[in-house]
Length: 69
Length: 306
Image (tube, rainbow over all chains, first blue to last red; front, side, top):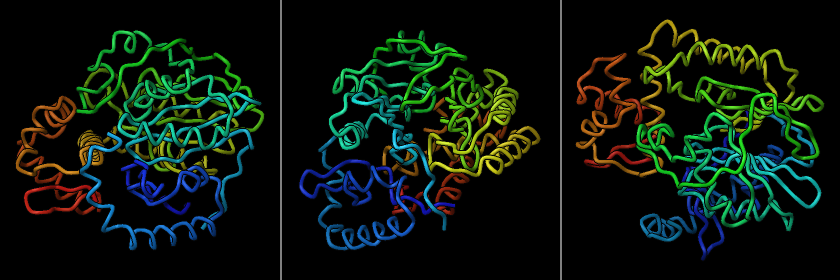
């Protein structure tokens, strides 16, 4: 089976970070996901984990904001 | 571990999640077609992703595999943004034209959508040119009685919508709601699909896959299980649809769940026809299932999407 995408169904791009508020991927990373080799997917998952750690606390409150609604 | 499925360069699959179906973008020189548009609340990201992969090409067409909210939710915004024509399965054209929210399963399953104008009807047997390939539209009733799948014989690719996933298929709404022979239709659809030459499946949800035979075997096994035990089908439908709603709303009050389950037609009918539980017992079961599956967690009085 393929490596699961980090999508958590929030699917809203942050204007400040340029990353999805849910999965912390860029548009390019989301768009390329299904064509990526496993090594690339694992690299993106690592980046996602780093970004979540760095941005997670700041990004969380925007879940309740009307931005992108 | 697996290597990426190889698709022609003229096809880009935007793999989304469960609330939004995948968007399949197919290039024909300077123009492009997208199959399915995701859920309404994800519309802005859908448009941004389309711009990213279009890279200046013109999106002239949007095609829907079927009429559910996670496949048509972005239609209106995508059409407004790109000015594309929308083609829908012929069977759903009157429903869309009248914007019948019951028939579109929006009210039936407590989901949201945005009204759009469909320009063309697609019939089983029609051919479409997308991604420099010729696709045949094939009737795929079951999950949605008007659904179509699209098959390309040369490259042996199937765009399967929710008729066939890597592990299963979409909720058999007609069967659960008592409106038609969803199981029989789904079986005939799977049998028809099984006769097609297919090397790669691009499903409505999940990654494109090559394990066509195994996916068919799993789907047939699930159908048999549903046929032998309707309660299993009903529980599956309730669990899947509540997962969808929870991903949409992000959280729900646990105390309000029994009333929700008693008022939304899908849950009410599934329970009345196959389970016969009190709304409270159904809610208890559901909270247990969703938390055990890791879909949700309890935070005080709230059920929160994980």
